[in-house]
Amino acid sequence: MVLLNQKFLSIQRFVLHRRIDFTYSLALLVQIVQEGTCFPKFMHTIGVIGLGYVGLPTAIGFHDAGFNVWGVDVSQRTVDMVRRGENPTGDPDVDDIVPTPGTERWNITTSTAEAVPHCDVVLVTVPTPITHDLKPDLSYVEAAGRAVFEAIPKGTNTIVVLESTVYPGVTAQTWLPIVEELGLVIGEDLELAYCPERFNPGDAAHGVRQVARVIGCENPEIGAKLVQLYSKLTTEDVRYVGKLEVAEAAKVIENVQRDINIALVNELARIFPALGIDVEDVLSAAATKWNFHRYTPGVGVGGHCIPVDPYYMIQRAANIGVPANLISAARAVNRSMPVHVASVVIDLLNSSGILPQNARVLLMGWSYKAEVGDPRETPAEPLAIALMEKGIHVSAWDPHLDGTLLEGVKVVESLADASGYDLVILVTAHKACLDADWGLLKNQMRHPILYDGRRVLNLDKMKELGWKISAVGMP
Ligand code: SAJ
Image 1: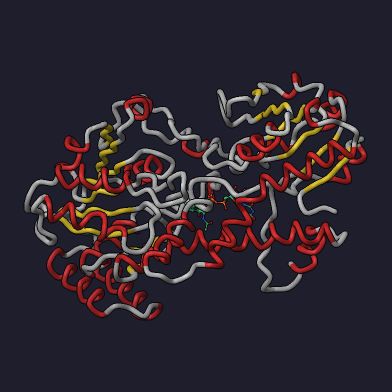
Image 2 (image 1 turned 90 degrees about the vertical axis):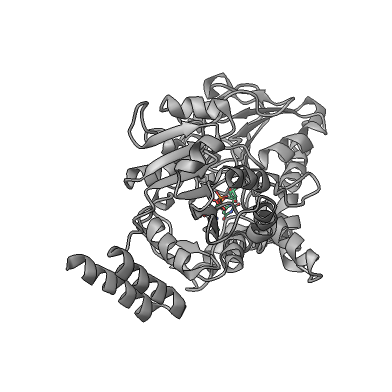
């Protein structure tokens, strides 16, 4: 009786709060009548293809939610680490949650062919990077899809969900030809759906179990079942939004919007200093208005999402001959920031009588953002390259990363050993950078010049400590 109330409550909630797809609620109703439960009885085993920053916490989330889980990764190193209960990703939030060896319902393998026949639903969480000429690289999505489809037993109607960020149309355009080539039948052997990952790396409040999700699928019944499946993973809202392209487009524009908003403040961080105004003073003033959305200018936009996904939208628009001028312009502004910061730093050195070819610069942080150990698309790299091109000796300290960062960049293991530098650039706002002993570091400097590339330091305090200060967006 309780269950029945819950089910009708959930429908009522949908009706009340959403402009719903009638067929969807009908599908939910039919399923309740047929199966007597709103949790599809055949969804017991979940497969996750790709155990990276997204896939591993997702696999762990479904395991914690009570499902049998098969995790697959092509990397033997990743599989060996996960099997040992270790965390192969650079995300510290995953460190303590990897199931220990021998845990029930937890199967880790490099073989998609071994895993898929056990699975009712297969989630594909592989990278969608860009090529060197800034074009979408769908090779991982294609390869993962083919491996999954080749392993699906006929007649099992396995649901395959793409979670990677793509442009609208990729799920169908990339996977349907392979499905047809393999002679599989949608509705009998498999169903395709799209549910973009949205979790925010380094932000425990927005992990895979705390973010709202959207589901795109041509079949509303499957859409209904996936809403319930993901409702077991996340505490937040899960919504069926209709066709695949709607969900694909929703995710990519979430990141496009963020890139554009950041580009605006980065552009202002170049305009206002030329007017003798500090951009942060302006942003603080503007932020007193209720609908001003504040972003922070910085040395650049990194990671495998924000500086990448807009190129997917740019390509899709180009394919249909519609200009994406704003998206392209924003990308250009954000891409230019590391070189801009390098030129400001070189001016700072010159104005202090330090020839670039004799200068030694220390980068505080290398990861693309705070509290993660992730160097992908980090702005630190083009910044270091631009400085080294002028003959500057570049070193970097990042407690979240091990080993070589970039050829030519000297890795500093401990700040206590960091001495004889002429200028420090704060590149990543790790807590360890903010909490560093800036007084001690200042005393170890050849020239105590500090450039805050993230506008996170208390610059007045730094000045009191004797640093000569400058920062992005500061005149
Ligand atoms: N950044 C700025 N100024 C800001 C905010 C960020 O310069 O005001 C920089 C960061 O330092 C970093 C880059 O932008 O270098 C991206 O960092 P982020 O925290 O904005 O985003 P990601 O890449 O870690 O995660 C994003 C998130 N997307 C959105 O917030 C719209 C996350 O929710 C997504 O799940 C993720 O992309 C993804 O996987 O797509």
